[in-house]
Length: 137
Image (cartoon, rainbow, N blue to C red):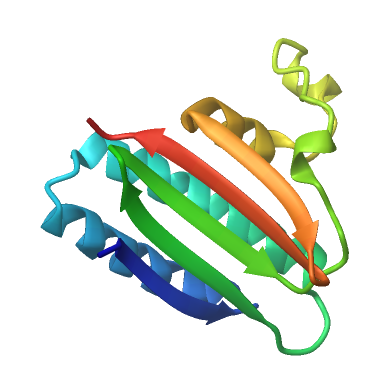
């Protein structure tokens, strides 16, 4: 039996709080620490915000989200039908540069890489698939 939660959100930023509440409920029921839940939900928020704001700007689209507790890891899989985009290929931002000299954007992906233990991207069947995980035990 897989311990998981699956749902879809539409490409509207107002969907993110509903998604976060469902993920938090899933995690609290499994006694996952508040710190891990915060990091995980923040990462998921950044991923969905990027998909909605940059990839799925026209028309109505569904973004598939699944969350699972797998072998001591909290794992998210996010899939969308937007244009192919590997966020892991984006260059890391220069976070040491003075703020007024920094390029706008890129911090969400940086945050995801920093907060999660592993992040993977693949393109399959006309969809972007992003998987990330954090150890909970």
